[in-house]
Length: 103
Image 1: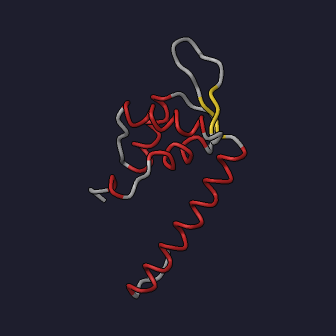
Image 2: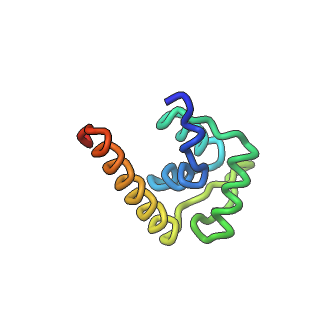
């Protein structure tokens, strides 16, 4: 989808990226770009990381050289699960109303 930006919430993209393990900022942006084809700019990335960390959804780990990795917290995993379920329900409803089966 060319206009994914309208639907892609940076915080959720970051939580999804961190769901398979700790990553630093560049690795998060690369993962998101590889998996969903959406590029987060540095300002968007670091603002979202700050909000997620303040909200207790992720935590920063000790720096590795100049890089600071982040990992998902239990609260972050629960929030990601909740939001993914909500999106799945919306997708199923949308496809049903369009007369298309959910794959």
